[in-house]
Image (cartoon, rainbow over all chains, first blue to last red):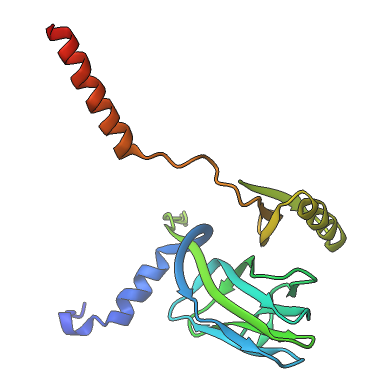
Length: 147
Length: 73
């Protein structure tokens, strides 16, 4: 059996080991936020906000705020790596900021979680892209393998 | 006060939105969660009047001193 010295243990290995022991469930506990407001006047979907994951995220409640102006609808949607995966949201005829919340699953390290938006004529604004979840330990699940 | 109302379809959602808005409730969040779809409304009123605990303590102290003086007489 090789002798493992302290220098052989990489931080990435430790993180991987910890990730193996935990999963995430959706909750109302805020874990990460990207609050800056971003706007677009384009008439087709364009990327407005983006978060890069540095570790897997099994389940996550993602929220973002959407606003319109000049009486034109604003549309917003959650994308993963440039592909729409969330439900299309739109402000309708109502003015002001609205929060849209959606539970999604199956994110991997390196995935890009994005908010895309567009307007039908005015300005589409989005802000407060936030992640809500809890980390829970994964219980041991040994397998009996008697011959 | 916040109220949370479940919905199923877009039409159902629009009806709830219109009804609640006419009652003075404002939509603050539209949720599509694993356990269902919900609209969260707020009427803009505080859940309960805020209590000024420090003022209540001061009033109790004054009352206690008054009672102690009355007892001493």
